Image 1 (cartoon, helix red, strand yellow):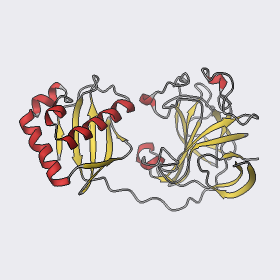
Image 2 (cartoon, rainbow, N blue to C red):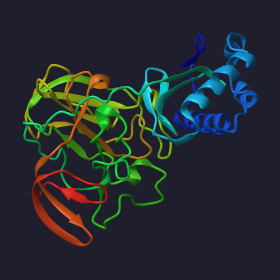
Image 3 (tube, one colour):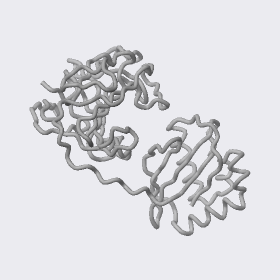
Image 4 (cartoon, rainbow, N blue to C red):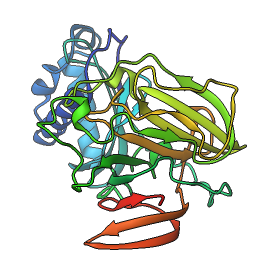
Length: 315
């Protein structure tokens, strides 16, 4: 099931896509086909006039029923894909927007089969930092981990530096330097070969994000054939390794920054089964040892996988 035309230039961020997806779902459920047509750009309107698009959406609703739920978006090239739950089943809704925020392409198709998750990793991992860090996103479900719907980032961690006062920032938070994470050292979590380095991406001002270079300054390390670490959002100009380097556990990689799709200084870390970032499937990462503080209690844990809300350190 598809509504598609030649795509115009793209320029919409994630918020624009999510807003359009919600509006589109409301219009489909209401049977407002003229309203849907108003969301098309000129090329879509020309290729699919109201009489043709109305037939399509009537058929979609007749076959699948009303839309009950829309999942979190994932990126496929320049498209955003939403898993849509209808009364009678599920479909992937794939949307492309042009620079003006209008629909340039729309596709409904059976959901992409979920790739099998790799088994437990063999590489022994250490936490890639010193000091105390708050697990802002981390865990096995969407409720505690915003990365959960993205295949290669399914078990990813977003980590915020914590100061002696137990907070993640000082001052008013308008400068990167206000955040304890900014400028902290980031280390290799295990021995391996650096297979890719991205650098030269500017650090964002807090509250601003750069979806056009989502990982920002980034280091990718291959530990085994199908065990690859991805560390993202380094400070511009701070990375001290290059592609092809062999690194040891605990070796300095660079400094924590606020580059890429990042609203405040933090480390993004995940483990996946491919050295090609976009082709990987996430692996649940288990660290050999961590000191964990939660609900006022501190304890040392071994073979530990962090979860949202915990404060962790390697000491």
